[in-house]
Length: 150
Image (tube, rainbow, N blue to C red; front, side, top):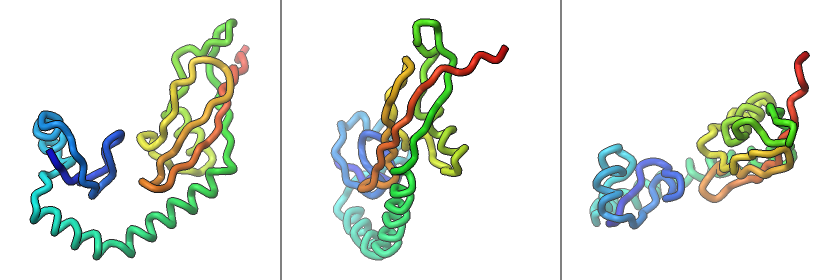
């Protein structure tokens, strides 16, 4: 089944992409939730016309994403977490904690566009931030033991 995405769908595509998905996924999830429409010939023509009209606006959005990526390239985060004596983190450190630390530095980034494997031990990791479909940046972060508040 061919669909036109109306918004970004993680691990599938970005807004206005034409994607092929299994019939059930499209009919039972993407279309009812308003994330996609069926890619008929007329819908494809309308999409092409809309993209042509929005090309200038999209170029500015991409330029803004590239500018933010340049600022994020020099960022290195240190995230304090409660750890056991063996060095294992209670719970895990993931995209939400990375987003919180970036917010403390003045970068308002939605945690949904941050791809970070759950860090379950003290150490160094890398998070990928997908700012635009063609622009992503890797941000290193270190998980350290929280100082005992005694």
